Length: 375
Image 1 (tube, rainbow, N blue to C red):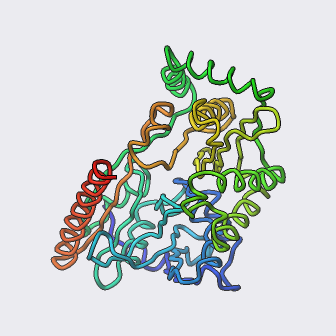
Image 2 (tube, rainbow, N blue to C red):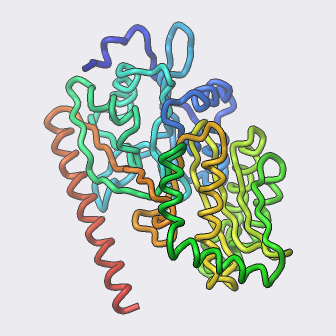
Image 3 (cartoon, rainbow, N blue to C red):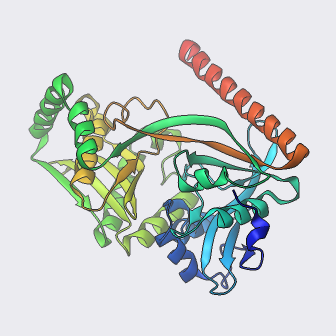
């Protein structure tokens, strides 16, 4: 148990503009490289291109820094938004493009760093939330230890992922056993009718070229028709190109491709952050839908992850219940919205936030059910 005041003389709070020239990118990146809970979306490589492309997003970077050394101990972008339908609350920043809200915490960080972060982030309302937070993360564990603060999971979800080592191999063999393995092999043989099968794993500068092929493939599918492909508007095209370029410099991105002859069948973009892999975007050629191109590339990527030294686990970042990825990536990544509050007012607001999130989730489920019935 700890009280943030215990280290008042050792820690200081900074609120920074992520795009300001004076924001020290080297210290920011150093923290990201040494975070106990990796998060590619809270790095300058990702956050800066996003905010440059979407300047309307009001986000400040909350930093807990050691006074003596000026080392960054903990940091995350913070915004103010509605947690559900109505209740406004300060949260770690997440978006459709970045469904992971884990603050960066130095691998030597402890309860005092998290306590100082929560106190600063919550502000006078004594209330803040961390959406899309892995339940087993170090931050989630330490947040529960802050003296005088109440932590509660307003919602918990589970999405697909996979392990490494022996457990990962078991997950892969289980997913690819029996009828599925035979069917996917049969589908690959059918793809060979259109040319020799070729698999590529692109990193570094090759990933930049591979991303252009990905965007073209995505635009030719249903996302292009719906206007949600990365190339559908200038902002998302600019932002995503810059992210891929930034991450390619240190091999922080891998693009897996499945080809049949000269035809790109499927492509998956993955971010590599330390010992963790995050699958970001997937696209496939709908002409070959009967050959399960999405499932094929997901299985190919999992196999490559298992064969890559140093990788401990992978997070699909997919919506829970995803019908394509969950039968293949058999591990589970438990995530949720952690709400932290202090005092009677904060506790009351936290209860409202939890109820608000529950109502929003219920209405969203009902809307999906109605759409399924009435189209």
